Length: 234
Picture 1 (cartoon, helix red, strand yellow):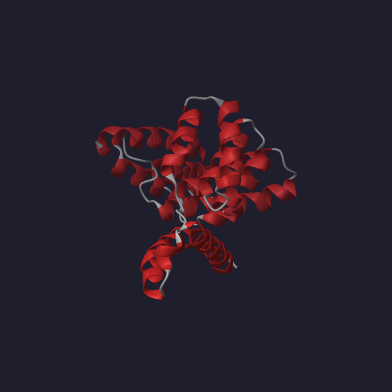
Picture 2 (picture 1 turned 120 degrees about the horizontal axis):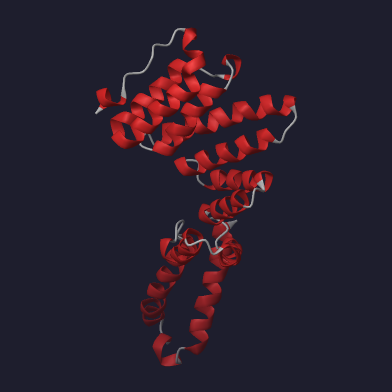
């Protein structure tokens, strides 16, 4: 469908060029080809190869978001999503805006859309897991079980996509420590995440060990061993 649309648009461009070019420029077929084909190539290339990611376009919106200008950010990405519906950044930042406004169901919908457009982004997975996490605190008991599996899946996927995503590993550690075993909770898995964080960032590793001790203190009877002192991992 996209190709058909591009084709018709391109022919309209060429027809217009033929109308406005002086007749002497395309009196014979050879001259006409030399004049028109390069333009045809440019038109086809531009139409058939839209930029999937337009960093220059979203730079302003990202700046507005990071500086806390909520209304301006909302206006920017609403417009951006209409102009570039194929770019996941629009859906992602609209999801982040909804999340910051504690509208977690709406946030999840936008973040799901972002992942549909780009299933390889670790941060999209992380924030979708977080949105489901907050939704779970407001849900019924039965829905909490359903959402818990989604939370774990998205946190694990975020780590899989980017092993250096410290925030994703920290959230996954929290999940493993707080979830019951039948929903995937495990002190051993939590400790594994702490160790991976420590390998990548010493200061974040110290924080992770402290959190592990705080949340996992009553769970170590499951067979886990106490973590080493923070000085050991330095």
